[in-house]
Image (cartoon, rainbow, N blue to C red; front, side):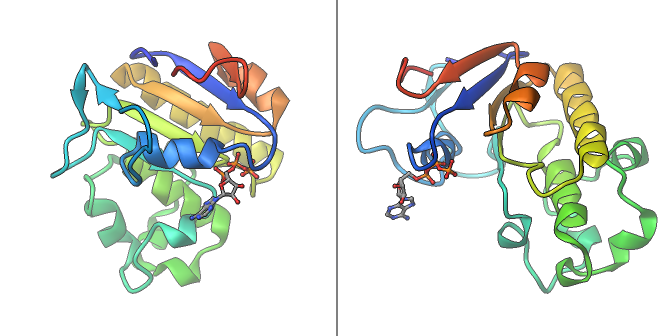
Amino acid sequence: MIKPGEVVGLVGPSGCGKSTLARVLAGYEKPKEGSVLLNGAPLPSKGFLPVQLIFQHPEKAVNPRWLMRSVLKESWDPDEQLLASLGIEEEWLNRRPGELSGGELQRFCIARALGPNTRFLIADEITTMLDAITQAQIWHAVLEAAEKRGMGMLVISHDKHLIGRVCTRVMKWGSSRTL
Ligand SMILES: Nc1ncnc2c1ncn2[C@@H]1O[C@H](COP(=O)(O)OP(=O)(O)OP(=O)(O)O)[C@@H](O)[C@H]1O
C-alpha cells in the first residue's frame, strides 16, 4: 500500500518486473493475480486516471504529430511556475516531440502528469537519461509538486543514491510483494 504523501522506492535486479508492476498499477495492463485498488475501489476505466505513470522513454508517451502545447493541454494547463521549475522554455511549446531532446521531452511528460487530479505518481527511471544537475532540478520540482498536492509516489530506479535521497521508504523486490 502507498499512502498519500509517501514516496516509496522500488529497487530490484534488471528484469525482475518493476516496469511491469508500474504498468499494472497505472492500469495499462491487467494483473494475472490480485487487484489494484485506489482508495479501496478498482481503478476508474474512463476519464482522467488519478494514477499517472511516467516512464523512461518519453518519445513513446506522446503523439509525434502534436505541438508540445497540445501535448500538455491534453491533460491540464500547467502554470508558468511549474513549467519554469522543470526548466521548460516557452519556445519549446511551439515545437513537436521530434524537435526536442529526450530530456527536454521528458520534462513535458512530467509536467503533464503533475495535474491537480493526480493522486499517485509512478516514476519509472524518469531521469536516467539526464545529467546530474538537470536530474536534481527535476526531482526538486517533482517532489515539491507532489508534496503540495499530497500525492503518493512510487519511484523505480537503479540509482541507489537517488532512491536514498528522495524516498521515505524503500522496498526491495523479493522481500515483499505487497505494495
Ligand atoms: N510485453 C512483454 N511480453 C513478454 N514479456 C515481457 C514483456 N514486457 C516485459 N517482459 C518480460 O518481463 C520481465 C520483467 O520485465 P520488466 O520490464 O518489468 O523488468 P524491470 O524489473 O523493470 O527491468 P529493468 O530494471 O531492466 O528495467 C522481463 O523478463 C521481460 O523480458
